[in-house]
Length: 104
Image (cartoon, rainbow, N blue to C red):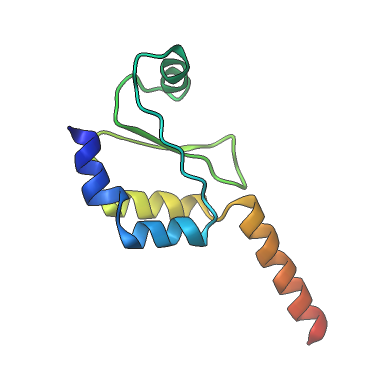
């Protein structure tokens, strides 16, 4: 039940999806069906319950951001902002800045 509430109130929102697209985030959804892989991942990140959300920053993959239980739109937006853009988006932005600087 909490998964559906989170989807409606915090995840499937235009403002969240806009930031996901802007940052080049690759969303991945794994339903918990007692599979060893999902259980292993939950354990690896210190959780044994669902819903569980994992955001891996492009610039610091060793320090993932985790959210669990009932979450808010603010929780998700803050986590996405903290994680920053994906490596691909960051690299493209850096290239654009360099090209602009060279022209000035």
